[in-house]
Length: 452
Image 1 (spheres, rainbow, N blue to C red):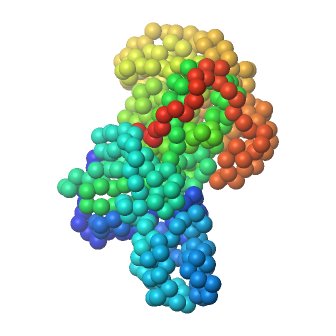
Image 2 (cartoon, rainbow, N blue to C red; image 1 turned 90 degrees about the vertical axis):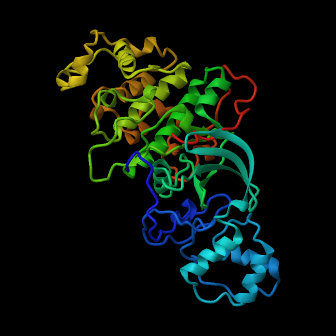
Image 3 (cartoon, rainbow, N blue to C red; image 1 turned 120 degrees about the vertical axis):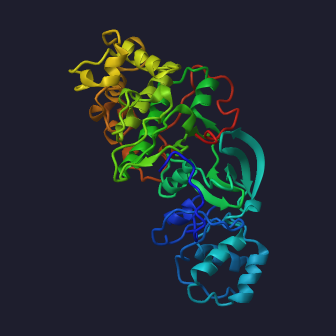
C-alpha cells in the first residue's frame, strides 16, 4: 500500500463484509455466516450499506406455528445470529409475509437486504455516547448497539471527496476481517456513507498506557507475565498468518475489566507475503522501533514486532519507557548506551552500514539488564535479552517466546487453549492486585488512537 490516501476510482465497487460475516464465526451481538469467495477490498458508495452476508449456513426452516416470538427465535438460529439480538418486528412481519415457508437459499442481493433490514451496516443501529479521541483522519466514539445493547467503539473515518478512504483504514479493514483471536480486537461491522467510513469494534475499557498510569507505574510482576503472554499469543497468531503489526506500543494494547489484553490499531500493519521486500522504515513509534529500522533497513519481517515486545516488557516491569528518544540519533544513543555499541560480533555487517558510520557513536559496553529491571527473575531477564538482540533474525519469535520458561508458572493448560478462548477461562489464571494500585485501574475508557 502507498502511504498516500487512495483515490476513489469511480469503478463499480466490490462489497465490504464485516469481520464476523467473513470469518464464519459469531461474536457478541453480531452474525456469522458461510464466507463468500475471496474478494478485493473496496467500498460501496451506497448510503449506509456497508456489507452483506454470504449464506444462511443452514437449510431454511418452515413457518413456526407457535407465533412470531418462536418464529423470530428460529430465524435467529437459522441466520446464526446470537440470541441476544432483538430482531425488529417489522423485519419478522415482512419475512413471514414474503417467505412464509422460508424457501430455498436466497440470492446474494436478497441476503444482503435481509441483514440490512435487521440493522447491520447502518449508522442508525448505533448510538454515539462519548467522544474518546480524535486524530488526523478519524474520530473515535464510545457507542451502543441498539440490537444488543452492548457497548461498541465507533471509529469514524472522514472521507475526502477527491481522495477517498485513507490507506491506513483500508489496511486495517483488510487485515482485521481475517483475524479472529481472543487477543486481537474484533471488527464487528463496517458502515460506509458518502462522507465517512465507520468501523465498529468491540469496546474495551482501557489501554496498557492508562493501566500503568492508574497503578502508579508499579505493576505486579505476576500481572506483567499474564499481559506478556496475551501479547505474545495475539502476535504469534498474526505472525503465523504472515501479518506484521508494525506499531506495537502500550497505547495500542487494549485491556478490559477482566484483564484481557488485545492488539489493536492495525493501520500500519502489513501482510509480509506481499511480493516485495522493501517496506517503509518510517514505522513503529520511535521508542519501540528496532535499531535495524532506525538505521534505514527496509528489509524486515516479524522481528520488527519482537523488539517492540521487549521494550513493552521492560516498561511494564519498571514503570518507565526503555528508550524514550526524541530523535533517531538520540534513540540509537539510548539503545547503545544500555545494550552496548554494536560490533561485528553482536551485529554482523554493522561496521559497513553507512548511516551507522556517519553517526560515529561512542563505544559503550553492554550493561547488565538486571541492574535496570531488578524485579525480573533470571528467566524474565533471559526472555528480555532474547527479544532485544541487535541481529534481527536472532530475536526470539512470538511462538518460541510463548514456550519460554518465564511462563512456566502459568501452567500447561494455557498452551492448549483454542484461538478464540481467553486465558481467563482457566480458573488458575487470575490477576493480582498491583502494588501501586490507586482505586480502579479502569476509571477511564479508551480506544486505540483514532488514526496513526
